[in-house]
Length: 295
Image 1 (cartoon, rainbow, N blue to C red):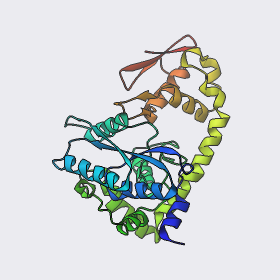
Image 2 (image 1 turned 30 degrees about the vertical axis):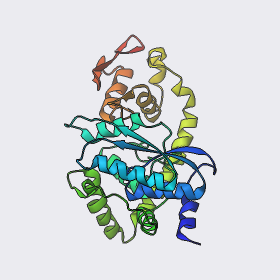
Image 3 (image 1 turned 135 degrees about the vertical axis):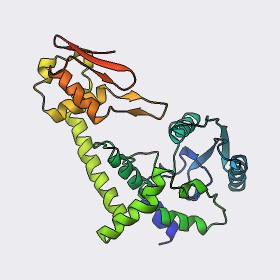
């Protein structure tokens, strides 16, 4: 079996002939996504976002456009301006998502999945944060290893772009990639990436089961709940309901649940141990009688 056949077997692409949008930056991951998508027989439109964050960004956009022209693939370029300053990466990611179709496919690999798990773990994430990308149809390469994908691209005639910021220790993900994961592999005496990816899949299956168990809870609005009834719930069930009910959108980078500390303070309000608590986003959860109010 050829390398491309092995990689395609690991991919989770839709049926051949399906119209899809691909996010292609020009790096080896996204070029691998493009080449595998073509081999699979997808009808592809490439989307490239130019953040104008680097002097070479316009040249990179032309490079991707030229590749698409050579491969006879439709190309759509997006110009996005992101002001410099704090939280630039998150704001750039949000701007990129807003510019492209919501269903756009990305070249995230199993290695990206594990890096995200470790980053979320360091932030104290719960089960949702420890099961990223699993069963996500926009991440068809989530079971593909990064090195295998890069080797596959190196066998083509295409020249991938190199983003020097991927080596900078200024970004936490890079330190996880280049420092933390190698140490974990050394301590474990094995490659921990497939191990952690497999654990994420198992946890995702249990998460889906919890979602089914708690399906009726999701339909219960904060303002409709009776705190006397909520106080009889197991703490895990109450926390899960509050995490969903108090989730909020941030700077355009998706919807995120409240922190563990916020949830714990909200539990105290439900149980009558506190009258009210302040939450992120200038919000306040209070209790009057047996009813909750979120302002």
